[in-house]
Length: 551
Image 1 (cartoon, rainbow, N blue to C red):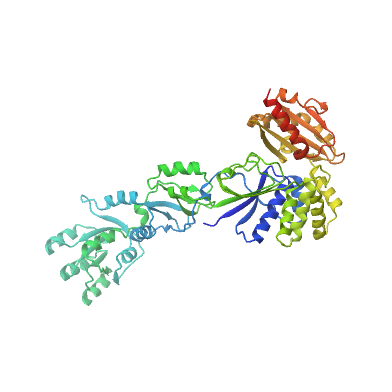
Image 2: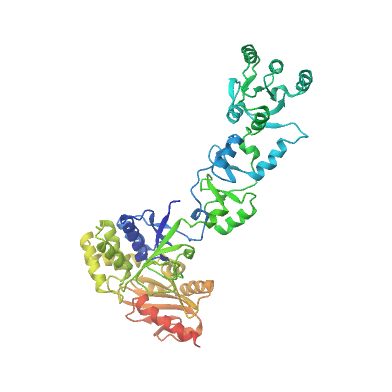
């Protein structure tokens, strides 16, 4: 099973989160990590779209969640049989590969039914019921293949018919009376070296004559058979074995279970468990988006390791990570935020540096590994730094960020101040966005003292365009807060022209009373000279949440 390593940022990703995922996945592949893929855990905001479009790089794949699904545990398995395959061959495949079940597929690869030993046993009893004649759907071609017969003369080998097995075990006259009562067009006569019976069967015009024990037919009878259009086969086995194998020449689907329904490879493991529990074979066929069978999911697959691993960038708290990430192994964390409550079962690479952008860390890792930076990767890494540091103006900006920006601008041949203005202008185009979209573009969830809260951030040229939507903003914040029971939900509106912010807060009144920022309107506070959510606003909010918890 080929493994995939997703490099992914936080939910509601900003430019730095997506850029660092793309650049770090490129770095890991260059260092030899096969199957390393950049991903994102949300829609790209206008600024990020602008950056990727400007430099001609496709956005990474969008993962809605990482809730465990069948596709994460399914072993690559090409074992399936086409409709019409003789039962004996299908059962031989099951035995060879030690399988208790096998999917049967239509000519286009879509699912038909499942052959398993339970269904086989039930259907076989019907075929060999001593109170009824053995009737099988088969063809002469399938019989030849199954009993490894020597074909003497064969007519219409691919035609499917309902055959009646007639074993010539009676005395000659009794057998003649017995055969006369049969439907000769569907009669398959099994006989040894009894020439009189062979002749009578051919003259009667039976569908097929099978001569057992490797006995050969006389030349005269062979010519008669060709005249009468009676197919003659020579079986290497005795009559008993030949009779049983002829039954096994029936198409596999006649002994299969059509009631077992397939699952999509995107189905959750929780629902797959229920399907396995109700399946007689404790297995379920799996189909892809085109409804083609791609494997068989069994209980043993649940014990295997999933086929994906995770590298987290630009965050390290599970509350900010894509839903379901806790079900998979996290190999690395590359971040520049506070260290949260991430717990791992195994030692991992954890890189957390005091810089203004994860893009700064990733760019530095190219230099540490002496790997050249492609022009497009250098360009978006520079954009990631300028975006997360508000053009190197944020309080989180370090000399490392400035040095790295200069280094990248030299590679990309881009002027820092002009590029920063373009990036920040692209982020401020929010007039067409709804309040719900605005607070969702860069929302982060935090936890402290048993309370959860969210802070979203948006950058604008003028906060007036947000003030005009104040009522809508508070309604959207209230919905976000009520949906998950947050202590409060806030939107930080950063004025990239005046280098200050406004804070819209919807939350418990007791908590709001603790805020000491100047109030500009009900629920709106002025944050003079505050640009950084991470370094300037978050520490204050955590302190206030701790005080609130003691009330």
